[in-house]
Length: 203
Image (cartoon, rainbow, N blue to C red; front, side):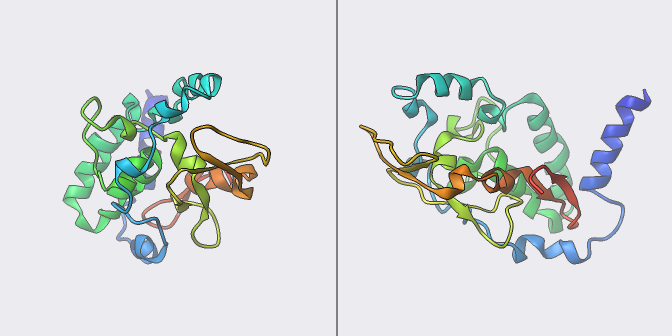
C-alpha cells in the first residue's frame, strides 16, 4: 500500500505544495511562450500527411506515447480529474491550464483549444505531439529550454537534421536545433507553478 500512496503524495506536493506561492507565482508572466491561439489547426499539417513519404517513421510515431501524449489514460486523469479541478478552485493557478497542453498537445495550445475536449471528442491533432510542431521548430524563447518555450514557424518549410533532402510536398532545410537535445529540453525540462524543478531530463 505504501508503494502506491508515496508517488501520489509526491506528485500532489510537487503540484500543490501546502504553502502560498511566492516568487514562482508570476512565472508564466516572466517566461516567453508562443502565443496561445496564434496558429489555428489549419496552419499546421496533420501527421497523417507525412504517411505517403515517411511510412516507416510514421508507423513508429503512431506507436509512440508522443503521438497520444494528451489522450493516454494517465494524462487524461491527471489533467481533467486532478489539475483542472484544482485550477477552478484557485484561479491564481490558471496558467497551469495552458502549461500541460503546451507540451502534451501543442497543436491544441497553438490553436487556442485549451482545455481541449476530453478523449474522442477533440480534434485529432490535439491527441498528442504532431510531427509538424517539431519539424517547424526553430529554437526556444529565453536562455534555456523548458516549460514548453519552443519557437515554431508553421508553413511549408520543414526543418530536419540533414542538408541533402528534397521533398515533393514541402520545402526542406537543415536547422541546427534539429540535431540538438535542446529541442527535447523545451518540453522535457519543467518547473512547477512554484518555481521548483520537477523534471530535468535535459539539464
